[in-house]
Length: 445
Image (cartoon, rainbow, N blue to C red; front, side, top):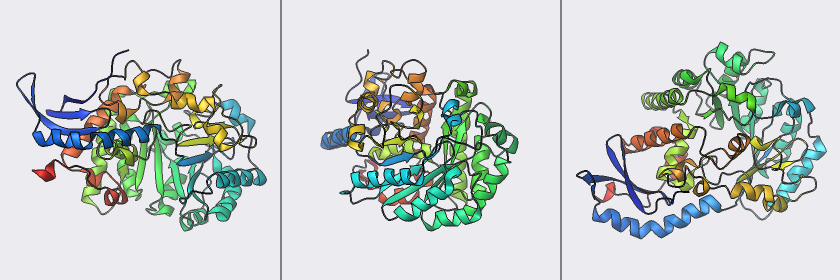
């Protein structure tokens, strides 16, 4: 295994020299003299010395702190669609288990008791195959526990009606809706169902009418890889505030046939980022690409990141976990059906026991420093080499990410956007308001 780089190092990006400590993410734009020499302004070294210890501690806490930020509950194994890349094994969906009212109530009470001393509300996200197949169960739980938890729902949107949207907005429920393309044919090919999924979701987006708690999730496959800029234009026209454009996870064998060409995905994704930025700049409506925003934050405010898949170790079994429809506790949904990663059952196991279990510890022990290809990568603490479930299912979780070059290119593009002072079009307004400079070389010139 290569020894990882330590301290400040230069490397080139689009003609710029970036100075970075990969361990704590202190960075600055520097200059080289000649082929090998470097010139680092004295104030840069002074700032580095001043903040290094605090930044070291901040990254250590971000990576190895075990504070739970969300618990995913899968209330049913059933689904009303047949998405080609679904992460839930077919035999589990065919099993068709669902939580009953008393079971869900028990789970929520158990979570509430565990966090009874916390001042903040714990986040509960109803996920699954299709959670709205038990819509009445969920809406009743949201009504009863809205003062205890913050709720979110991830859905394909097929069962949402206008009055449901009103209920979700009234109760400030976060909502993630899956849509893979602005082309009806492409979307419905990837997400086949008994009804026209594209038409239904398009109507649902109009009902939400720019609701701040709305996110669209687009899974990038070989079928829609070149359609991402058009998807941005379509979602912007529907007043969607945020879209996540995620490469397909290859955890399930059938999903691997949908793997997009990596260079094509890189080009299309960056075009989509730039198009979203242009539209946000020219109009009154801002649309951000959430996973790119997270990349920007990994550079300018690492501890402010909200998505935990690109941190090493990842958030699974650390910042969040999933409770399945049968009560099993797994690090995240990608581990459903994978042997050896169940941390007990919520009806028999305490949350504390699950968090200290061997399966969860196994995920928390998976760090980039232990991955041969990542140990000396300057970007290791911006990327995190996701996803352990995906890589484990492909033979070894201690290998570099399937889409390593894509992540590198996206990080480089984020540096470019930061240099061009475009972050105002790439982050949510609330994020911008909450950011405060710890150090700013430009301000000291």
